[in-house]
Image (tube, rainbow, N blue to C red; front, side, top):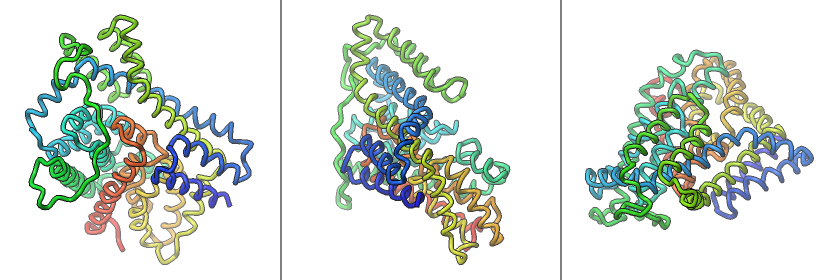
Length: 438
């Protein structure tokens, strides 16, 4: 019964968000509350929500001050020369820009942090997309693809799979290297295609074979990209660049909590660029609406996961899902899991899947002579790798949507097919290489 209620709760949430029937904030609060009441655990909802908020609070704090920090640096003109240089180098060639987006996200994600990848890549490139009128969903999708396929031995899913099944990380990851390379080839091919499609839509290339693409959301070009704004501080550009590089370096090093880094950096950026209290207040007020909207959604997401975990819905779903595997599919379980891994990211948070479902699936597969490492490898081809930038159960999804200025449902509808495609390509290559067997 609990598993059925949990499944219905998650499916209803996804349906409401993807259809844009109600806002994500409302859906993330109301739907799990109704689910808890249907499960007969309405009295525990306040405690479940508080527990969920406790886990999401550092991420919400980081997001707030990250938005303020990058907004202040953009106002001060830090990115204006970069945008001008890149525009001069690539001209009006969106295909080059999208491929560059994938390359930058891939490099930044080498530290294994999706949050760092998106916090650095998207604010740096969004002004360039806006300058050309490119669809911001392409920015969100391309960055998500590069980060999703770039799973590494030290990234969360790999570490969780290793810990859950007691298998060395290298034993799981090393055979997947050629599979990942194929996935990265798909990423860059997709980025190029999306860029070419934007070129046709913007009238920058012959349109005889054009495929219609949705118009982008209205955009506002940041100050300073068409001239010198009173807010810009050209004399401080090198100091601002040094501050930004220090922030990125500290984020990558993991020396301090991200929320602490961005809090201090925001205060420093304000004092350096806008020393007058009135100026500081104006800059905060200018960027507060965007920050607070997404923080509200993040806190609502914390309530959602808190309720689902507190009621036991996630745990019940894990056990029921494993029990549904037919005997005929026992030896093919790795292939089945690899195909479903990305969609399962929309249903299970990473801890619940890797520590709850994965051991059960490995035990079931063991009865059919399938090695546990195959189950771990299958999971990595989608579960919270290609799936994490669109899952409503991870803060990164809201980070991508917020930083890109794209509604959550629009980001998911646009990006899910591409991310799922990357997962299927890697699964097919794993089959060809004999990593999985039919």
